[in-house]
Each structure stands twice: as C-alpha cells, then as structure tokens.
Amino acid sequence: MERNIPLLEMKGISKTFPGVKALEDINLSLYEGEVLALLGENGAGKSTLMKILSGVYQKDDGKVIIQGTEVDIKNVKEAEKLGISIIHQELSVLPNLTVAENLFLGNEKINKLTKKLDRKTMNSMCKDYLKQIGCNVEPDEYVKNISIGEMQMLEIVKAISKNSNLIVMDEPTTALTDTETENLFKVVKMLKSKDIAIIYISHRLDEIFAICDRINVLRDGKYVGEVKVKDVTKDDLITMMVGRKMEEQYPYKEPTNVTPILKLKDICLDGILKSINLEIRAGEILGMSGLMGAGRSEVAKVIFGEYKKTSGSIEINGKQVNINCPKDAINNGIAYLSEDRKKEGLILPLSVKENMTLASLDKFEKKTFRISKAEEKNIVDEYIKKLSIKTPSQDQLIKNLSGGNQQKVIIAKWLIQSPKVLIIDEPTKGIDVGAKKEIYDVLNALKAEGKAVIMISSDMPEVLGISDRVVVMHEGRITGELSRKEATQESIMKLAIGE
Image 1 (cartoon, rainbow, N blue to C red):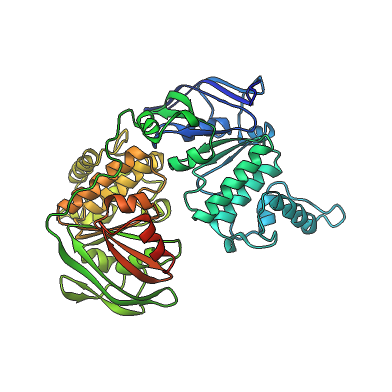
Image 2: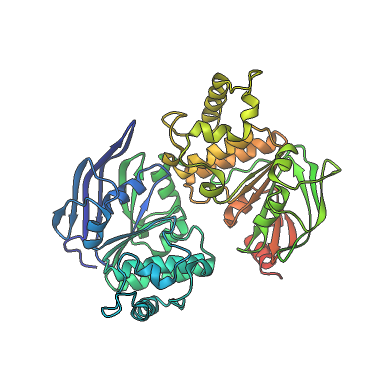
C-alpha cells in the first residue's frame, strides 16, 4: 500500500488527571484502509487516548491532525463530523427500542406531513445499512431480543450511517461467540476494502495477528513503539506490553493435598440444568468449559444461591446444606465472582475501600455498633499490597481503575471473608496479559492454602493452562470430566458440542 498523507496523526499527546499522568508524549498514525492495533496492559492509556480522539476528553498537550489539517476536537459531535466513531466495550444500545430506532437515535427521520416518526423510511434505510455488512436482523425487532453479536453489528452500522472513515473498536469480541467473532472479522475486512480505517483494541493477541496490519504499544501512559504484524511474535508483543519477558503465561502448580469439600447431587434448574453431579475438591482448581449457553454460570449461581434449584441436593463436607440465597452461601464459606464485574461485582460510584469491605463490614464492627475505620483501612492496605492493586489510594473511585485492578478488588472483597470455595466466572475477561498472570498467581496461592477454586472460562488456553481437572458442559448437562493429562483443545471441544 502506497503511503501518502495519513488519515490520522496524533503527535505528542499528553493528559493528566488528579494524581495520575495518564498519557505522556504519545504518537500514533493511521492510514486509509488500515487496521491498526492499539495494545497495552490495563491502565496503559489506550482508552484515554481514544477518548481524546473521540472528543470525550480534552488533551493537555499535543496535536491531532486529520488528513493533514490540525483539528481541536472539543466534543463527540465534532469528532463525528470529522468522520470518527468509537464502538465502546460496553455497547451503547437501548434494549427497549427497535434496531432502526437505535440506529437513528438523535437523527430520527420525520414525516413532513404528519410531523411523526417516518418509521417506513427508517426501517428501509436501516435494512440497507444492515445488508451492507451481511446482517439479517429485522429493523423493527427490539434490541433486547437480538444477540450480543448482532448488537455489535448494530454499533458498526451506526458508524457507517454517520459516514465515518475512522472507526475505533474497543474490545469488540469480549462477549462474542467464535462464529460471531468470525463474522466481525469479515465485516472488518469489508470496511478495510472500502478504505475505512480501524483502530482495534484487544487483549486477545490471536485476533491482532488475524486482522491487523500494524501495532502501536503503550505502557504506563507512554509510547513504547510501533511494529508491523508480520515482523513480530506473541512473545515480542508481551515483552513490549509488560516491559519484561514472561516465562510462563499460565503458571501451573501441582496440588499437594486434595480433599472433597462440596458435592452437587442431581441438581436441576427448570429448563436449564439437567441432573448435575459434581465433586469440588479443596486444594485444586476445577476448570469449567463449554460453549456460551451451556449452563456453566447457572451451575455457579445455583451453588451461590442466586438461582434456586428445582431439585437435587448440595453437600458440604458430607453434610447436606440448604442454600436458598447468597447469604446462605456466604455463611457456608462460598464466594462467587460474576463474569459481569461492573453490573454484579462492583458499585462504581464508591471507592476501592468501600467496594473491598462491603461484604465484610461486620468484621470491623465494634461493641458500640460502629465500624472501626482504622481496622478497615489496615485490611484494605494489606490486600492492596498483597494483590498488587494499582491505585493512587484506597479512596480512589473504583470506576477509575483498570479492568484488571477492578477484578483484583473483587477478589480481595471475597478473600477478606476467608471462603472455603471460590467460584470465579471468566476471571480474566477484558484483562491484559500481565494482570492475567497476577490473577493466576492468586488462584494458585488459594489452591496451595487448601481452598477449592471453580474457574469458569471461555478462554481455552486458560482452562488448559491452570486447571487440575476440567468439567465440560453442553446444553445444561455435564458431558465429561477430564484430568489435566487428558484435557486438550480437541477433547474439550468434542464434549462441548455434545459428542
């Protein structure tokens, strides 16, 4: 591809928030019809840089140049006028509106005679846009009824409808199935063929090698460098991102003292789970694998009392227990980390300290029925240090932390409870390679302490890398259990599709 004037140049971009230098002297260039990967650990500054480009934040220093002309992007509308669209990791769709209503939100088509919404025109135009990217969703379908992958396509169509020539995709495949991810890649290649430029942010390095042309790497808010995809290996990228060589991406520790602790006997959940029999053992990590919708999270939520089983029994240390709500589970030494940390694990407007101690306030209660602030502060400081949580202070709002550090705060919240069984659902979803290893180290430490860990994951290398046993589910049933030696990608996939 002949290089002329870049579509986008960002030169010397800097941004400071109170107490944090988020970006320092960052450079980036992007050409028409190119897919540029933007890589870095959580907290490296990727999202901040993209928010400056899309008008959400204002830069403190530096230049943004579009097609050779310097621009000052003051808000999102100005960015859109310049042809810049951003598709955030948390999709900005309204579930109770139709696909067409979402597409034309803020830019509705009005019938000149009736002064009402011209739904016929909106639906027709929406269908044409969807057709361009090979999406067959009906324009009058409510968004709450479509899949996550189709919502992702809707976000892309929004960008196309605004005549964007630069689209930022932030972790676009986090919640997609393998088939939906393949469809997304086809759409990316189609956009590329139309000279639309894409900045692609992902922690999944296989995706970078599949669809990107060049890679820009940030670390701790600084520009590390730029490389061509064809010139680097995964190990090269990891070293650039974390600033050190990682000998083991998936550190595995042999279990030393394994004993049964929790048993599920013939557990059923109406229409979802069918006769689940499972033994969970202290001192090991049990990996749970399966395709989306297989019932893995539902098993976790039954154990934790969020869902009430239809039939069957749960035993802890050989004694049957009644778990009818999460409080019952907590009282029996069971902790659960949801895959959706922002909706079900955190209270975003509260601080690191408040989120970390929320489930354990009774531990800090004095005889006067007041919370001992000193004890609370000491335990929070202890876990910030123990789990290497990067935060300016324990009073920092949790929403300002990176995904990996948010996940560590949730782990700390439950570790303060000293659980016997820790269920962790998609432990490294949206988390960079450096933070992933730190979380694996925490899980291995819990295993060594004699805790039982149930790890639900859609990341096959993760399941194979740190599990002692793997249980595979298909359509609400357990289709097989594999030892660490037996577990391979092929053997797990066969069980996951019901063979």
